Length: 68
Image 1 (spheres, rainbow, N blue to C red):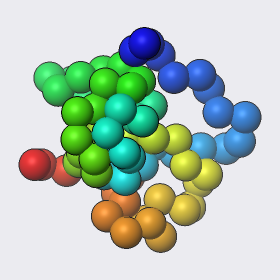
Image 2: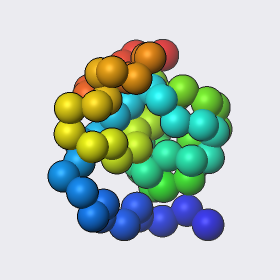
Image 3: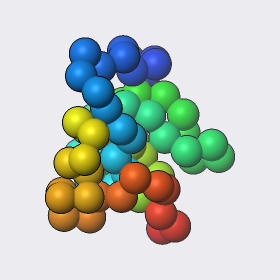
């Protein structure tokens, strides 16, 4: 069931382009905006909370949305 992602218990940043389909914490306006709604893996407009400083260490990770 889609809904808002809970706030993480660690200092976090949004990491775009690294989630599995349906495993996102949120998305970009105009695409989708709720947790669990990404239809494709590594959707460049879907994000997941990651510990601060780790996103760019993940292959394909970005702290800003990317165009498809």
